[in-house]
Amino acid sequence: MSLSIVCNGSRDLQSWETFAQAAPNASLYHLHGWKDVIERTFGHPTFYLAAVEAERVKGVLPLVQLKSRLFGNLLVSLPYFNYGGICAESEAVREALFQKAIELAQQEGVESIELRHEDSWRPGLPTKTHKVSMRLELPTSADDLWKALGAKLRNQVQKPRKAGVTVALGREEQLDSFYEVFAANMRDLGTPVYPKPFFRNILDRFPEQTWIATAYLGEVAVASGFLAGFKDRLEIPWASSLRPFNNLG
Image 1 (cartoon, rainbow, N blue to C red):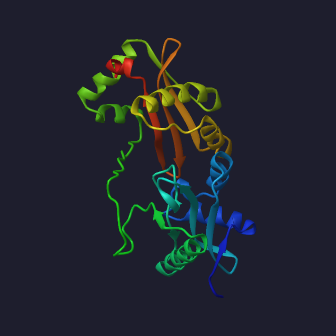
Image 2: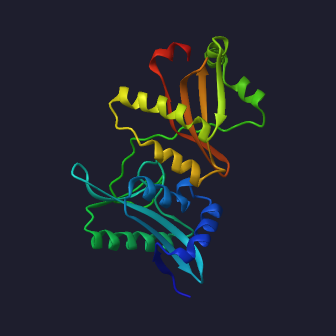
Image 3: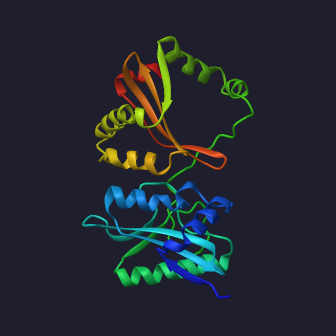
């Protein structure tokens, strides 16, 4: 049975999700649901490539087309997130998806393709290494984690607790607080802020994998983080705090 590359194939959707959930090198952003989030929020064209053999998905490559006067015409896997790229069960499948992406770029008049891999899998391609992923292995209990933080960091955590800061973990009910803090921080940094529907769409599409944690001083939200979970990893792709309260840690 020969391998075929399918673009935006709806009948392969469940097989895509099954593959992404099982593949050891898949990230949260290889799930098919991000196609809906990006299309609903930004309206960008999306090209979700699946390598299929005997009705089984053997590899995936989610691509989003971005067009702007500043950056030109690009295919990115995936924009707005730190991860993406090709996820495949073999080098042959990976190469087939890569070649299909090149064909797609030529058809769409795209100037470049950006694949956000963690590994440098194809020697000779231009590579950016300016981003760092920081990961903390979690022990079996919160007490063990607390002891492992060290005295200085524990003191920094205790300072806002003593000042009366509390933390709420939720979802849609925390969105307004999160966005208020996030937008203020992005404004202070001079960075364009994502629209609120972007985060609402993520919460809607991934109800069992996303949360928001917000720190309050009284009724005022002073810091907030958007959490996303996949397999054995929990990450914080977006987090902000209000500068007037930085002295509280």
